[in-house]
Length: 170
Image 1 (tube, one colour):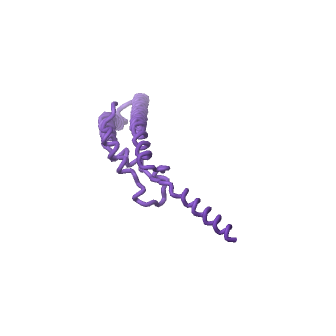
Image 2 (image 1 turned 30 degrees about the horizontal axis):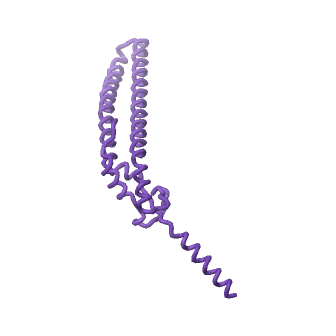
Image 3 (image 1 turned 90 degrees about the horizontal axis):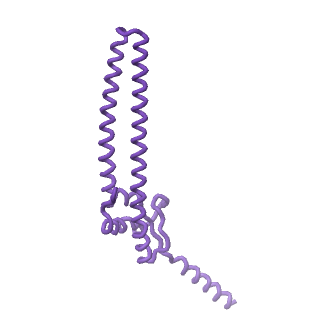
């Protein structure tokens, strides 16, 4: 009986020692927003968006003026001529929408490409931090329901990233 008790305690103490693995979690979206390189990318994308959408707004204004002009000429023009102008306007609107979708797709592709570049630079930083601090596993914060705030390594990684990378080449 005494031997069984000793074996039982050895098994319990041995299994609890395996439970001492160090874990952490990280918020990658916060890193991409708050780090210097993340802010640099967001500013760059915002500038491109503004420039491209300003051109689209000008086109949209011209299309609206063209539409008003056609509507005011409805009673003056012959039906065939009116229909022709209306069809031309529809074609112009379709081109506008196509161009707008192309610009949106292009911007989304740039965001993805820039994010991949940052993550490529970020991965060795996280790996080194994990090795230096004997962390066994790092979870993404979006998959964590509840966790101690001292397990969050996001701010520490942001500091390390800011020390290594503030801008990327476009």
